[in-house]
Length: 428
Image 1 (cartoon, rainbow, N blue to C red):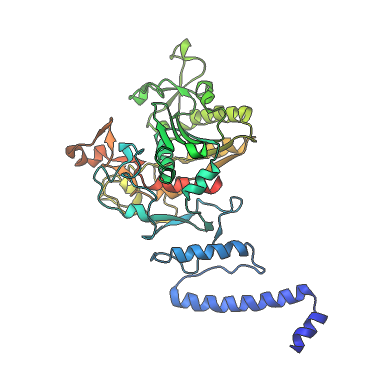
Image 2: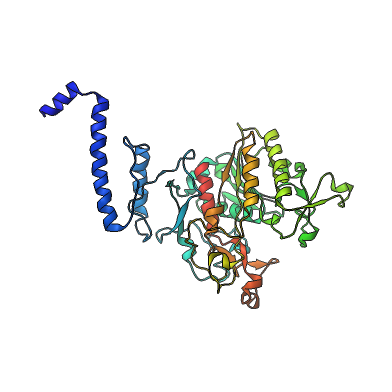
């Protein structure tokens, strides 16, 4: 009591704080040594006073919720998601049976058969219970009601290829269960589709534009990739559909990975298709992205519209990439790859670099949803033989031939795209 009175009279506040921090550090260091020797885990000590202390208090609740997972780290020291500080790209998949999907392919009527793996006969379910855990922070759980409130009176549009449609359907399914019948509607189109939540005056839309720019194949699809020509300097016909949208979420990747050189054309198709040039894919890909970026910079009102870009969704066509020498592509895979930093041939670093270079030079701020690394691990999440081909479900004979018929590009729903939408939700 006497010392405390003396300290208040003689010691300055910084000195008292320093003494307190030193004592706290000693206690934490002692605790760390005990924890390390008993559990094998190691965690870093933060400086004192501790930054984000209020956020960490919230985080502790999340740790208790996830306690059932055998892979959890009891000394988890992450902070609540902060877009300025948190890298969602770095982390690990944690198996957590307490996590239940917000929907199934039976409860959500809006899932294409292409992604309805359980309906199509997939009988393992572990792939539904892996949760992405960033190294630095807590990724918020997707709350459908909060998501809808954030979208109140707004339009969100997913623009891109079938992977982006995969993500769009996931988003619709994540929110639709809390909307009463009669208060929601879906209008499907070959190019443009709209889900509406009437009570919230909100729409969740999809626009088909696999290259973002125009081509001779995106509307009337040409199956032979050698005949596809990309009009790398023209986007107006597609982009006029994006005007007035509050939240735009773009992607373009899979259609560029045909295995052949890309044919790029400048000028009008009306002038003929013979003026194309053939390039290694990264060159026309970057040209097309520049055309997209120029349209965004010259057209988008940042007071009205927020722009996102989803990075490439990896394909898992070569089982040798993850060391399963006796496997067949992604067929019969039931667990993620656990090797940190795994990267296979299904993700093209040159195209990833093009995205970084182009977006880095834009005037309009674009939030990049970097889904690539976390999706690289998920060899177990693809539709595999539980999808469809040419609008028809695979026959038993085709299912028995995964080398030729397994879909290692698209993802089961529910599944990995739900995590992509958790990332999007965190930024909204």
